[in-house]
Length: 265
Image (cartoon, rainbow, N blue to C red; front, side, top):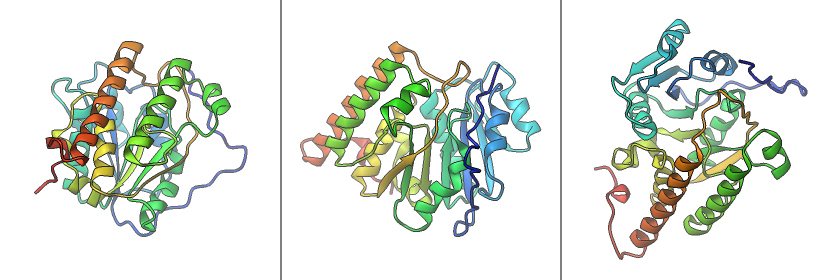
């Protein structure tokens, strides 16, 4: 396997976080053995209090590599799904006292050197949720290797989500996300799906509960070992995302009530 090189053309340097006392990075992992070490090595020193990896019953040696890197490891005894993995990630981060949480896919697709800068938006109070946007320009996105059908579906779904949710984001479907503790304490994420649509439900909840959300461009790498769902799963995810938006509209219009929009007590 050949890991793509990171961009060092402008002598990029990340500044450590200052205001958060316990920023925790969570990695929802499944068969990430080939990319995990590179992902961890790029995370800037001093930008986190702890790294927690939740392994969703991988069939490779993801757990062994994670343990050798000295990070916290939690194992699912059965494969429970991407959404269920995130639920365990966020539960663990909150239990460990996180005041900010970064969710990062451990497939080396996102440039983790930007973590301190994204946390800066949360530290200043400008946003309470920050997403890494893979779509700064169409040319860059296609050149990075995003499949054409994924680019088209991303543009369509992101446009619809912006209209329905009243946001102005460039990429609703990023695997690089930062949250304040208050967001995770408020949103009833345990009522969400255990599947990929968890992400769409979560951002609809962020909007419904009035949290400020933003994004910033992040370099992205597509290669064989980077995680990606196939066309059939992508289609299912798209339809479930549209269904989530329908529920949001009905909830906001007081025409129906859904448990995913009922705040934690």
